[in-house]
View 1 (cartoon, rainbow, N blue to C red):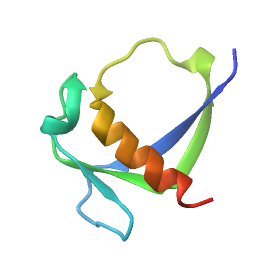
View 2: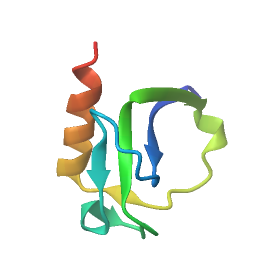
View 3: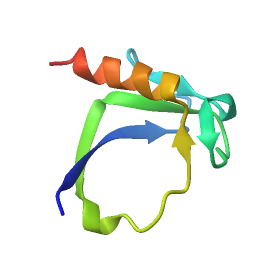
View 4: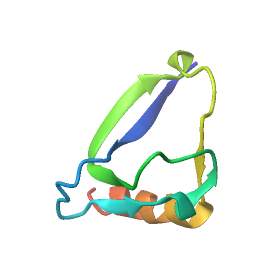
Length: 74
């Protein structure tokens, strides 16, 4: 197994430049308890072995928006 690169996410309203809003409408599956923001400037890596199940999935368009924001940093 390898590692996964993760983008930070928060539900705190301290919106910073570059944060991307995520609402329930952006969820392809799963439930979002409250509006949140993806934080492309906060990347983390985790071993795939730590992932046991998928609790939700973003729509393809929201995932593409976040991916583009991450790529623009490099």
